[in-house]
Image (cartoon, rainbow, N blue to C red; front, side):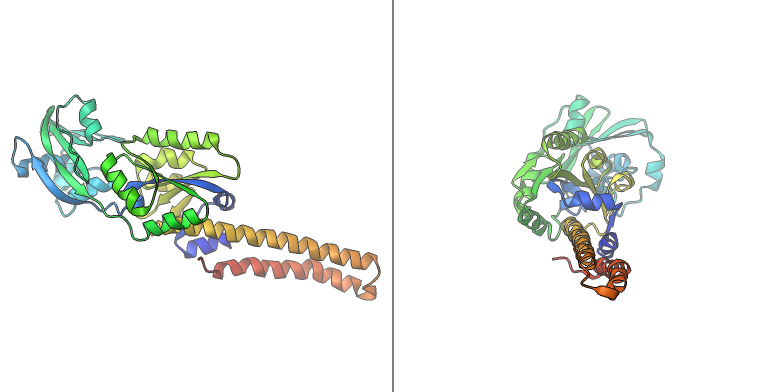
Length: 333
């Protein structure tokens, strides 16, 4: 019934054991892009260096044409990239950095500052608010595009609701500190970390797991393929089902089908209501049975003892089953 109620709310919980774990969450680590923000980036600024804007965009589209990352989808939006995607050679998506590919005999790098630094490309890092995607062609810096994302509706309310439940929230992101700080301040998260690789996020989760107890479990919410290791490692892994990668959704314990961050709070509340009903059923059942047994042993019920005993067994089972099924119609506050 609890899983059914979650399904009605657009939440897929992959087992009753995860309902129990949801009740015990003490800390939620949150990815930024696609989780707290829409992941629908707008290309706000294009700055080519040493080439025309058309040539710059051609190389950039080539690099992003085969990626499923929200940033790549934003760059390629409304562009005809089918022929460009087929022309790629040695295409490689580097987690937490970007893309490396060969296109028309040119080696192209497109991604964050770490990608260019690891490939020893000299460039000037951008400090403006937003997400810069740098481009290098044949080892030479070719410019950047600046993308901006928008915080999801009710993301701030999610943080407030989790705070009210006594659940700590931490923002983990691969973006630069200026962008992460801006989002954290907007939604009300006090603890945040920037410029993280996928393995860095997983390390934060593992360190938290090492310190937690059985009553304060660790959850991670993300959407991308880069978040999959952290989703797997956490006690409870949340994935955004709409925008999320197939790998993240497949490995998550809880899938938010409508990409609505407040559903994370809803899933925890559903789990708590389910647990409360289960505890009530057990306690009430034991109380009624012990009461009836006591009355029969004392001879108070007389000849009606057998009838009352049947009602206390089969009748009570039916009653408590109906009480459990009523969960499906509960409201989440």
